[in-house]
Length: 115
Image (cartoon, rainbow, N blue to C red; front, side, top):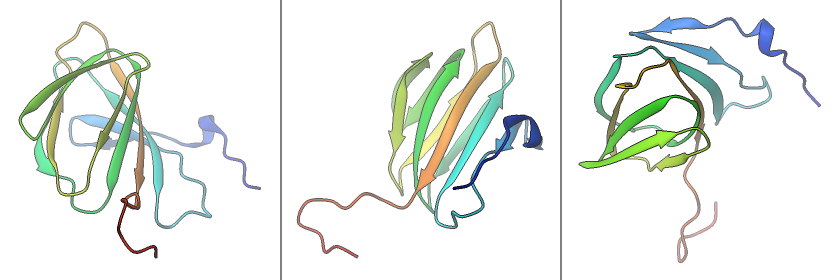
């Protein structure tokens, strides 16, 4: 078992937003973090080259663009972005956005070899 206190995970600046790293030390292939997105902040488009990303919206109204498709996330919504997909996001809402981000190696797809 490993226990981490939220209060002990101090947020740090990452571009125009903040990250709070919450990953237990036992994990080296996955990460778990809170992303704090101020009003008006935009994450320019980029390719998810390392991992699959799963975003859970905790607060706010965030607009993601994934492979040219626009998706609005509000509280409780979940978005999966596959490795090698192009994505970006923007907080055009009226309050700070908060996301939980889980980065993991990709899922095993039907018909693929198990590792």
